[in-house]
Image 1 (cartoon, rainbow, N blue to C red):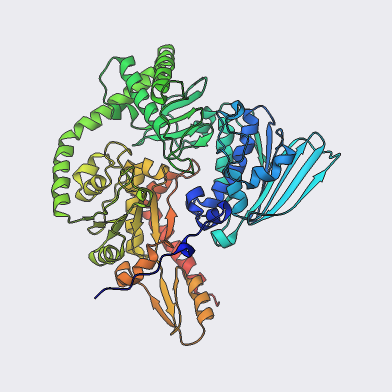
Image 2: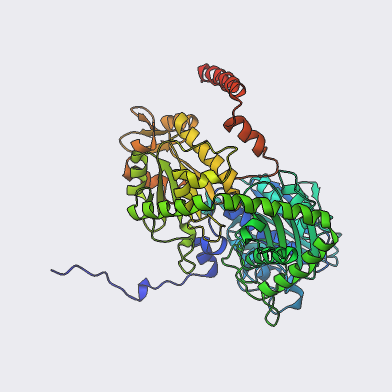
Amino acid sequence: MSSAVANYTDDDIKSLSPREHLRLRPGMYIGKLGDGTQSDDGIYILFKEVVDNSIDEFIMGAGKVIDITVEGKTVTVRDYGRGIPLNSLSAAVSKMNTGGKYGSAAFKKTVGLNGVGVKAVNMLSGEFMARSVREGEAQTVWFEAGIEQSEKREQGVNEPNGTLVRFTPDESVFGPYEFNLEFIEQTVKNYTYLNQGLVIKLNGTPYTSKNGLLDLLNDNMNEEPLYPPIHLSGEDIEVAITHGTGYGENYFSFVNGQHTTQGGTHQSAFREALAKTIKEFYKKDYDPSDVRTSVVAAISVKIVDPQFGQQTKVSLSSTKMSEDGPTVRGFILNFIQEHLDNYLHKNPQTAEILNKKIVENEKERKAISGIKKKAKEMAKKVSLNNRKLRDCKVHLTDLKNARREETMIFITEGNSASGSITMSRDVQTQAVFSLRGKPLNSFGLTKKIVYENEEFNLLQAALDIENDMDNLRYNKIIIATDADVDGMHIRLLMLTFFIQFFPEVIRQEHLFVLQTPLFRVRNKKETVYCYSENEKQKAIRKLGNNTEVTRFKGLGEISADEFKEFIGEDMRLEKVRMTKNDPITDMLEFYMGKNTFDRQSFIIDNLKVEADYIEEPA
């Protein structure tokens, strides 16, 4: 018995315009959409694409000030560069593969993407306006959803040269969203670190940098450096280096002014060069991990026509500085070997402090070497038995797999919760790691405990982050615990583990907390899942009488069929972030330390406040 086969005719072949394709598949151009709660959401990519063009003008020596205004959902960027040629303004902001960067020496080492960036902003904006002023003449063009509405030419304009772009991301594409000024402010600061002399005014507040990457390091370290940061610069390269006291490695890397949050060939070359140069300076065969543990560094390079791993430019893939130039690795290695070696010879006090730090790292590593060997054997046996890890088929290390960026691992507790996630997950990209009870409080402990404690050792092995982040197997590490007291405690314990021993997981924006619904509100026609008391009340009002309200006490109570909705495309994740302004040490000491009386008083006082709040009438 044969099954029916659907007809396949010429009518099934569709041809989309660039605008239609971009609006239908925006992720191919700007990464994920998001709602503005994460720093890599699509609305911030639009922001950067516009500002990048203004930065390019500054790099070319045209305009030292950029004015940026964010009002609600609308962003305005005004530079004082040369201004887009007036007759080409409409095409420059609306026609794909149209721009002034093709084969132009003026833009060999700039950040804007040839012919695509601002067009994507235009086509993904509900309203978009571009205005160019050149020598007393101005051209203005207005668009809606990428379709031109009108344009206007003016003579005798009393305005300085430059370009103004105003856009409002289209909610029909992005859904509800809000700009987070904290994310925008950090992006603005990064622009100024990399472009000394540039002034960016964000909603009237000026930002500028006199010392480049040295300012970046000083502004972003949440502890005192062990020695004054080393600041080195040359043609097409600038670096700043110091060490702190924590575990892990912390890098800020940039290419042509673009913040490459996931590193790439330049960051890998820098890590190699740092270890090699220091080993040669001290004439000792130090292990590279001992040299780099606790390092805090920044590197910026300028490359001709750089190639990135993806459209959002978070990882450099170029291997050469230019078509006929040296390799990225060779260029960085030669620079670091010459200039860092010279610096250490001229600054013996810094060299002494650095050497002492490396020796301390070496002693700790050797002290746990035997434990590590046994721990690896244990992790291998457990992996074979597959008791704790339910792995996925695709991993972040699968460089040629299109779904590698979708990979994630859920860290959860209890058989029922793990079972629900395991049954409802996408086995291609979603893995599950099951904790057994509450993990150990690792605050104040050394890394030795990572190998002595079975839970920590097996988790580290599952993530493959023992030595560095190069082999991290999942793009997202998601803490998935119940929304009750025990679940919150487990969440704090896991956060403490990563902050203590693997802070680079947080700094590279890989750690998340899964938000799961507290309530299910439904009637015969509709079901609404609610993540707060406020959402529950709104759902009850929306669905009216005869609603059934279920309070989920734990993840294990949510069926596998329901769970698919919470770990699919609409998954609610809260990214774990660390900034200089976060009092990490103080918070860990208070919440996870031994100050029992102070913490007890805090809990009692806040329980009373919460009780008073709950008793108030609605």
